[in-house]
Structures are given as structure tokens and as C-alpha cells.
Length: 242
Length: 252
Ligand SMILES: Nc1ncnc2c1ncn2[C@@H]1O[C@H](COP(=O)(O)OP(=O)(O)OP(=O)(O)O)[C@@H](O)[C@H]1O
Ligand SMILES: [Mg+2]
Image 1 (cartoon, rainbow over the protein chains, first blue to last red):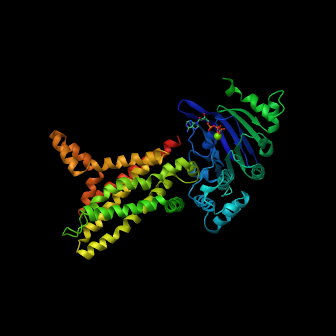
Image 2: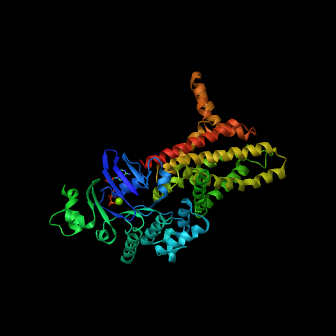
Image 3: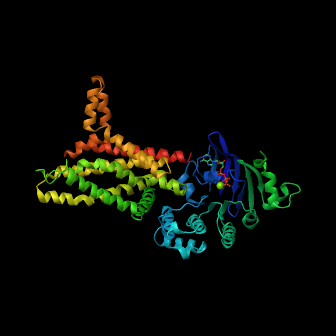
């Protein structure tokens, strides 16, 4: 479903993403790991069509993101990093707007809204203004937006950020369950989530892929390391050295 | 295909338009607009003292000055707010083209001005009751006034595409609108022409021809000139193209 080849992004002289390639098929959940500033969000922004890559190609379900962005974006659901929302709307009207832009109207729209309110436990706040939501609820509202059209591809930038332990658990379960039928990429700083939800994980450091494989394979990547935590530190320490 | 484009534009328009009514800014601006346009008319325009019932000198005359401040106040949230909230990223990853969003949002703001301007209609009733005004200049006056308003709005849209700060957008837009107004202000143009050597006169005249004011005056006189309407429409098109470029630079 997601095919990314030799993706590169430069901001002026700075290379944020350097020659990243991967594919994610339906039924796979790919975890994006890496220290702050590694280029996870930048990669996701290119895959979702927000940033234009300096070079490289992106295909979503066979459709080229650079040549036919509107068509390619149709099958993607995206949760950006800081869970942006229109602050002057209520939860339900915000979700309604997102549904409409995706061509879901009328009765199908109310059904879609009800479905995601259920999945994200948002019924209690459905008519509350987004402005007055707590951080976790804001995050869940934006997450709800990303699945409103039941997309085949889901790109989630730190989906469990700011959630309470119960909600973290629910979201992981949800990602794992949706991963059976969708192609999902999500980024995280919580390494337990890799075991909890990913079928594969990729560690990125300073824009480059330094490891890619199943959680089990990653553990064996560095001799002598037992946990993902150790592997992660071993592979991405370069940042701390200077 | 065409239908889908329209549906996208409408969805953006609807959200934007309703959001104006959720914010107190709109009501404040409409009230200020009504007070200012009426106030200027009755106190400075001396509409009641003059013996003609024309609105050209008393009512429409003041509109450019009001729009210079109020159009940026209405339009400054267009894209700045999207940048600040981060919803711009959300919008640009949805299956719509930037143009659909630019036009949907601009039309919503333009409709806000149409409503504000319609609310001044009582003044037409007043002059019709007091005298017997020629309807021609009133119709072209309203057209000119509206084109001026949405011209300033388009300039504001362009400025807002470049910054996440509404304050910066407001200041830059007001400055641009003042500039576009003053370069064609008859008093100023004439004195510039007088001080500069004669050979530069045609240049000054040309620059003033590019100003909002020049075209506005022609229209308020009651002459509906296609040329002036086209002028405002092309200003709007250019400003929206700049908006598009600004938005694209944010995604570079
Ligand atoms: N718009 C931009 N202009 C210039 N540089 C940018 C821009 N966006 C990101 N960068 C740079 O690109 C690099 C990668 O940033 P990115 O946000 O992708 O990191 P990340 O892996 O998501 O980090 P985090 O874990 O903190 O979210 C950083 O060095 C960042 O400063
Ligand atoms: Mg990030």
C-alpha cells in the first residue's frame, strides 16, 4: 500500500531525511522510532503529501503522491504531531467537517461521526467546544478525525502522546486491530508500544534508517543487547556524543 | 469531477463562514462598520445639509478609509490562524486542492462583507425618502464599495498566507491597502505631478492608475465601466495567486 523510495528532504543546507526507503503492505503496522529531530515527522509529512520531497518517490495504493496528490490523499488518514484542531468548533462539528471534505455527507456522515466517537470514547464531549478540551481529549479528537473515512492507510505521528495509561492501552489495541486490515505507520518514543502494536519497526537517526525489521530481529541486531531500549541507545547514541 | 471540486470548496466555505459567527470579532467589526459609515455620512458628509440626495460624496466617499482598517481585521485570520493552529497541515493532507481551500475561504470572508454592506441599506431608504436620488450612482456606488472591500480582503488573504501571526498580517495588510489607496489619491497625485519634472508625469499617472482609488472614483460617479470592474477582479486574482505561492512556500 505504501511504497517509499529514496526519500530525501533538505531544509536549506540541512538534510532532515536522507535516502529513506520502505514499503508497508495491508496487514502491517510499521513503528517509526528515533531520537528527537531524527526526521520521523518530516518523513510522515512527505508521505501524507504535506511536504514536497527534495527527491524520491511516494506511492499510496499505486498512486503517485507527487503526480496525483488529491487521489493519493483520499486513502490516507493522518494524525499530525500536535493534534491540530479548529478551536472554534465542537467535537462533533469538527468531525463533521472532516467527513464532508472527504466526501461523506448526509446519513453516512452521522454514522461515520458516531462510529469514531465510539472508537475514541468521545461521546461524553461530543458537543463540547474543542477549545475547552483537555490535552488527551484533543488528541483523541484528532485521532478520530484520521479514521473518519475508514482509510486503507493510516499515518499516526505519536498517537499515544498525552494520553492516560488506560487510553494509551486502548489506542494500542485499536492500532493493532486496525492493522489487520490496513497499512499503518506510527511514530513513538515509547518502546513498549513496538511490542504491543507493531509488526515491524524502523529506527531512524539523523535522517537515516539505522535498523529495520521485526521487533525480534531488532533485538538481535546488536550483539549483547537484550532489550529494545538497549538497541535503541546503541544505534542512536551519535547525537549525545558531541 | 467538477462536482467534487465544488463540494470541497463548499465544505471549506461553510466551515469558514460559520466560524465568523462563532467569533465576537465579526459582530464588533460589523457594528464599527455601520457606525463609521453612517457617522461619517451624517457628521462629515453633511448629508442632511446638502441639497442633493446623492450618496457619492457623503456616503461612499468614506468607504475606502473604513475598509483599509476593517477588511484586514476580517481577513487576518484567513490563513494566519490555520498556520498558528496547525490545521493548515491537516487541510493540506486532505483530498482537496489548495485552490479549493483558498477560494472557499475567500468567498466566505467576501460574503461577510456583502452582509455588512447590505446592512447599510437603510441609508438608501433615508435619501429616497428625503429626496429623489438618481439610482444609477447608488448602484454603481455599492458595486464600487464592495469591490474595494473584497480587493482589500484579497490583499489580506495574501499577507495571511505568509505569517502565523494575525497581528503581523493585520499591520502588513493595512500598510498595503493604504499604499494602494494613496498612490491614486487625486490630491496626492496632483501635487506629485507638480513637483516632479514633466517627463515623469505619465509614469505617475500610470502608477496612480494601478491604485484602488482611481477606479473606485470612476465607479462612484455613476459610470459603470467594465474596465474598472475588471481592474478589481484582476487585483483579486493576483492576490489569490500570491496567497497560493505563500501557502506553497510553507510546505517547501
Ligand atoms: N519546516 C522546517 N524547516 C526547517 N527545518 C525543519 C523543518 N521541519 C523540520 N526541520 C528539521 O528537520 C529535522 C527533523 O525534524 P522532525 O520533526 O522530522 O523530527 P522528529 O523525528 O519528528 O523529532 P521528534 O521526536 O522531536 O518529534 C530537525 O532537525 C528539524 O529541526
Ligand atoms: Mg516528530
